[in-house]
Amino acid sequence: PAAGGGGRSRAAGALPFGGDVRQECRGLARAAVRLDAPAVEDQLADAVERHGLTVAWQEVMMPTLHAVGRKWASSGDRYVEVEHLLSWHVSTTLRRATRPPAPGNGDGGPGGAGPVLLACVPGEQHTLPLEALNAGLSHLGLRTRMFGAAVPAEALTAAVRRLGPSSVVLWAQARSMASLALARHVADTRWGAHGARRRPMVVLGGPGWAGRSAPGMPRPAGLREALEVLAPAQERGPAADAPFPLG
Picture 1 (spheres, rainbow, N blue to C red):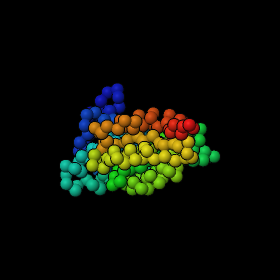
Picture 2 (cartoon, rainbow, N blue to C red):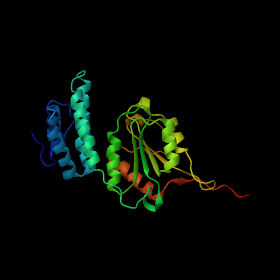
Picture 3 (cartoon, one colour):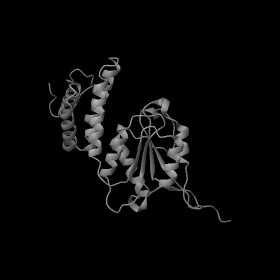
Picture 4 (cartoon, rainbow, N blue to C red):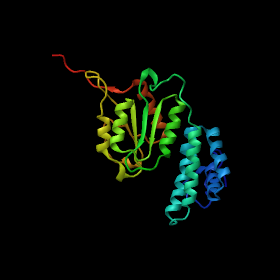
């Protein structure tokens, strides 16, 4: 039965939802288990329109994806097609919700700051959280560069030097993928003329970074917090090194 007042339900059908979830999660899960692609697509679009992107991601898409993933993990190879179908439609919905950059905005954001660079660490294939972040940043009018899954370290460093980003978000789903050495290397990547060298802020995303000590590298707990970290960073622009002493 539906819970009163909050639009949530403790009944989750055959999928293992933890605690109370929004009613939309139950309907979305049932449509995914039926492989009813049109219903999945309609319900995802309705969630974004009704609740906004951030709430739709954190309270509808993520809980349903996690429930399908737990069901797959506990059922051998069963339900993998359900997870793939749901993930594909979530990705499609997030891309449709991504707003195009404002005309004439160039590569910079406010004050000419570089874009926010979004990348999975080498070997990491989970891109949906970065796609949600990319869409959320677009709603704030901020420029991004999405590099997606499994970006090699050399390519990542080269992109940082070419683009001069205000921030770099590194996503790691698994602890085995999360390399603090790589994060520090990206944070130490400089560009610009001598005396005015600049470097990006590195933001660590994903459960793979849990328990890692990384001073100066924010680790947001969710989409809303990530947006709150990244928006001011782009307004400030990349951090500048201290100028070289003249004497």
